[in-house]
Image 1 (cartoon, rainbow, N blue to C red):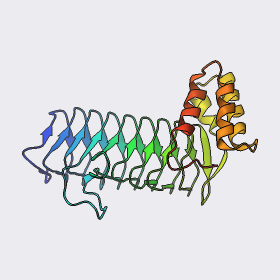
Image 2: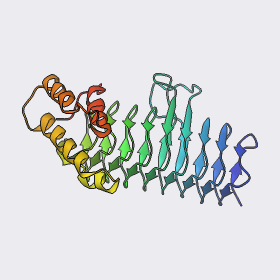
Image 3: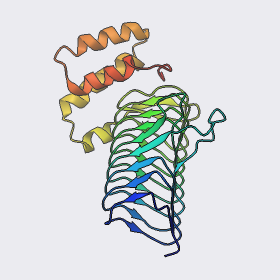
Image 4: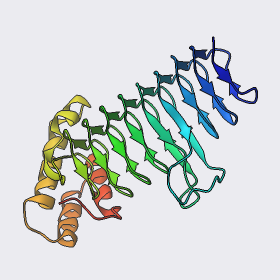
Length: 254
């Protein structure tokens, strides 16, 4: 069907490949994947089962990072992801872990971009033209609003949320909602927590934690001490919130 498939590519017999696609060498595509049309996949790229790629998406291309000099780097994609029109995903660089990693169940809407060496978890939503610079880490159940741009080396914690046209240059803790250019915290992703069946007590506990970080005027070190005191019962959600703050390397968005 006018597609070009490298004979060395390992493609499960259940994969559907539409017209005008290109699949290069060192590509592995697992069961029940669909390439609709005009999809480009280059390797080394390993794609697990049940992924869907829409037209003009480019997956596993060389990074445009000027330090890249043709080294053998890779892309790993998990299960049941959807890559809508024009999505671009680049492989890693030897300056980091030499690979870009995407987990399971993510939705990348039209023209979203995942740069080299990014790590994207599970069940995230990238709205139209949301983009990650290199080395960004995105947790699980994160929503990036349309035209969100994330600076290199930033991290976004689980269940965080970004508004339309948000520019992120520092780390976003779990559960926190941010918006604007430059980004600023505007509250908790309470709706996301409710949709993911967090009980009322847990939501209220995270609200208290949010106020400690963003409303009480504490230094970050003092705020973390208060968070640990609040978490005397080791609530899993609060532990996730605290961990996302303590693991920040670029600096916390406050």
